[in-house]
Image (tube, rainbow, N blue to C red):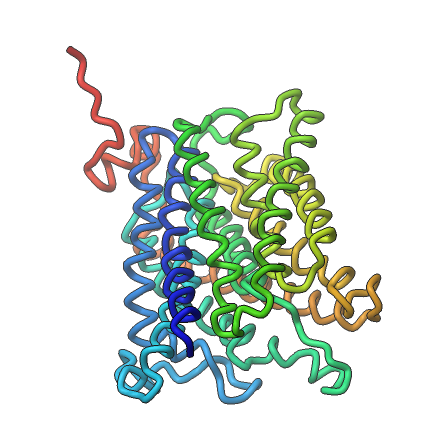
Length: 410
């Protein structure tokens, strides 16, 4: 592989890795001042743990020999020893590292649903187990030769030319994380005094910084894999990542203005993230115009979806469900209608829509059930939620013995 492609691969890997600290900043600004350390530590904890698990066995599990396999053999190349000694070791290990960054951020995203009330140790146990039986197998299904990757051929034959489109993680990352977040929100229950408007973001600039880092890193997230494809579609992917995100900001702010009377900076940041989520699966298979449509539609829908937690009574603290689950679903299903050449309204039939729906629903259901079972087991044994008095006092001091802001009165 040429040095330019390798250089882009390294750059893209670093960009996606930076997104997890971006999540930490984004989430950290949204919680109480007494919970910011706890919130950010869940992202950094995932960064540490999932990196290690991916190198030990996660990468092995992310590819399968047959579409009927659940996951790859975790012990096939434990610790990537054989891969590091192969003739193409440098390029293969770079690809493995790039894949690790997706696993890391998927787990980190889940944490936003349980802000202000989770034990760090229990979170780390959940993160390790869920990554092992949640993310690693789903990555194999979607990208590693598994049943989702082969669903179009299975249903319609190879000659139909239909395959599930999930370029960078609408199902594997965002629907997966959003469904798991919903499950954990139900397991841990509502925060003390949970109701609309009771808890405000403690540091809005921190949230905007996090959203900016996410947008910056997302160009590696979406366009990064093109280093393996000779950068053939990189221009389309980059313009779509810009356009859909920008349009989603507008869509969110319009709804917010009509609904609440004001367009807020947190709304702009949330709209940007919603647009990034939706374009993730679709970035290489939409024309720029349809990417703009996807963005504005997603921004509007997600701005409405974040209200569901108050109407349905589940406490998704930082709107992981409303942004990542809903945004992932919109982006994945949108392709069934508007994917270039295969979408229902752009020359195709119902086949593309059918495989998109099956993939989305399957990942949603599997992720929710697995996360609920793991979270419930931890809650009933070790305990997942902190005591009410610790939540009120602030989980930073009770869990980590630190304060986000050490202010001295002179």
